[in-house]
Image (tube, rainbow, N blue to C red):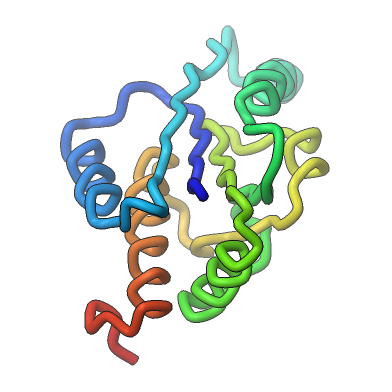
Length: 158
């Protein structure tokens, strides 16, 4: 089983890459995190029509990068808010079914509706506004925390 992260964005700062690598490294061998980075579409202007066209083009790239089988989880600020314990429960369920999971992170303007419509689940990691590259680190840490809960490791404290 693999945990895929498909993320749109420019090359993140080194501290983001190091943070992501740290939590990815902590994951068990049988549950690796596989990151696929996609370049964002260049926006010629910031008008709504241009942003929508760019998001639609990014959606084509995202959908092409999704592994064929498995659960698709779109990360969106308007998605369902879940707790870490709930994430651990979902992860345990996916693991019991041997399903790969693919987390989808949009670019600066979020995910296109085409991506959200293909998702099995739409989740918000926070109601706070964060740089989308930071979401990689937050997600990797939460996945590590979830597996720690499943395995009764002392990393997570209630």
